[in-house]
Image 1 (cartoon, one colour):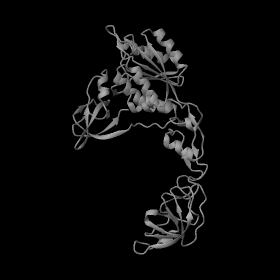
Image 2 (cartoon, rainbow, N blue to C red):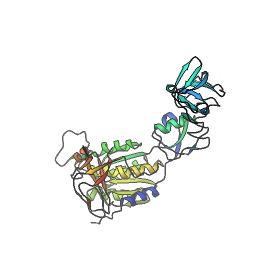
Image 3 (cartoon, rainbow, N blue to C red):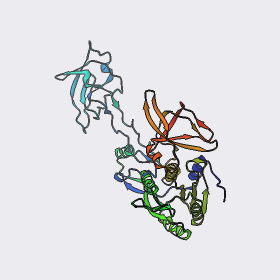
Image 4 (cartoon, helix red, strand yellow):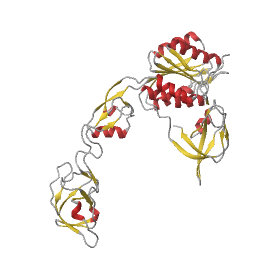
Length: 408
């Protein structure tokens, strides 16, 4: 039997970033742009805001008219009226002010706004009980963005804040990278559809497919499921070839056994050049992972055990999707600090991902390892996150401060 040649996780990520190119981009309306990745950098076509505006309800003033004002000696200004929302503000002279609402336009001569609760109005006489500094309670024209400034760089994932910024600039269409189509196959004669109610001896319900499909959808892709491939190489290869024509990224779930894993490796070699790039990763769980490039399309062979499959796809499948969408590769997930509750041993030279459960304690969060074999789904369901033990370490001790990546 051929020995597995493993690659370090960081080297696999480097291979992914160098090997796979972003998909083409196209225009979509702003209403449909959420979740896509920006294909072109956008520069602000105008100042945002395009006029000086108030951040509070109060009176627009010349700050110098309030200098020295206090509770005992208020400054007295003449209120000339109100700035109506959406209207041009009137001019004010020295010793004058006007009522302005949050977001309202300031008179050209005003350089500050005093909050309404620091004033008292009698007729047109406004008493100001504190002084304000120039620029206080004011957003200046172009303070958010100046015309020509970079508003959003290409590669930015469009979330609600980005959508709002683009709307504020009057941009109704954007160039975005096409969402990848990810094709999935489960492999192995022992697998049956998860909906089957009665199992024959030796059969296993396919739990990986629905879990992986959901994980891929979370990453903003369109998914295609090709079903379960039998342990017959000709069928395996033919169906894989047909699926690869329809997708941007092909994933095999299964193949931990020597025979099926060999089918996956042989298929990757025959689907296109350059073929197999990675024959195993120095990671636990997930060592028997395969990665290939077939005529520019990534092909990922996941281990069959559910914990391994989900762990590998969450790390390397996500990195591939980021490359296809030109999204900046970010090798992190949301994390929290915690104190390790028990000792954990690890083998030097291998990166370990340990499932942990988080519990509140008087001293903060406690990370409790959830031990179990990589085929036990219960350990995933009980875990709140993953603890990474770097390859240079030989374990962690109870009481160590650790960072836990939240499992989504």
